Image (cartoon, rainbow over all chains, first blue to last red; front, top):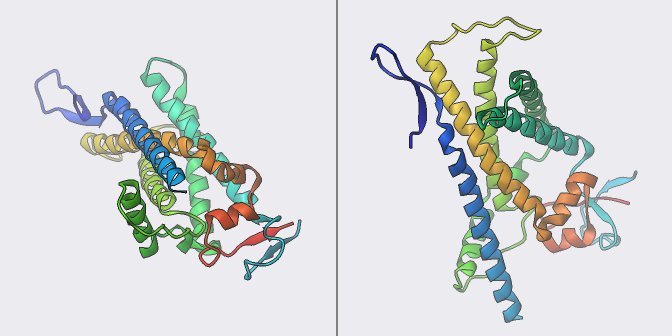
Amino acid sequence: MELFRYSRSLYGGDANIIGASWDLFGWFVAAAAAFIVVHAALKFLTGKRNQEAH
Amino acid sequence: MAVTELKNNNAPGLDTGRVVRHKLVDRLYHWIMAGSVFALMGSAFLPIFGIKFEWLTIHWIAGVVLAVCVLIHIVRAVIFQDRMSMVVTPTDVKNGVRIVKRAMGQDAPAPVKPGKYNALQKLYHLGVAFFILSVIGTGLAMLTKIDTPFWKRNPYWLGDSDWGYIYAIHGFAAMFMVSMVLIHIYFALRPDEWHLLRSMFRGWISGKEYKAHHDPSRWPAETKK
């Protein structure tokens, strides 16, 4: 998987960066989902622990 | 509607009264910003994923609206609001350490109540500020490549490789914004944060919510009847 999109020269010249790779979009969504799941799990566990302590 | 700043936060009435959290101008800013961000994301990403439409006009107009909103917000925050309320303080760091320790089952004192914003909200704001300013800065540069009713395009302002980096920064910052927006919606929908969601619609939290979630010495209440 590439980080950038490149322009390819027909004549074999250097490739230029033309932007970020859109293939990464799913990874950004997955990172947010992972954060949400971890936060929700921590909140659930700490809430349960606090309830048991009282 | 009567609005009074109370220096004495044990004043009678706080239990039943309402505390101003977001003034109308700040709520308008938030929702116009939200609308423009959704318009920007839709017009940017839907065509990439195969839903074709005339996206460019929507995108640049929403971008200009966002840029103007953010400019007004910066002026308002720096000159007319308590800008220190959004700065991460040593107390926030100490609180963060206590929260992490307690989450891991270690002994640590209970975290103290935050002022108007907690550490996570401040860090979130810092992140959004960085990515929004990145998309706005690069987006404004990209406006020179399109014709609008206000100016003619000049695509030769920068070389091809420079434009590549501008587009790359714009794209990465936009994808980071997708993550940030998803996280923001998650926090807004959490039941323990509903009082904050309500305050973004109606402007206030109750006196009880204020006492339960905030340290009056770090955020003096402005109440309304």
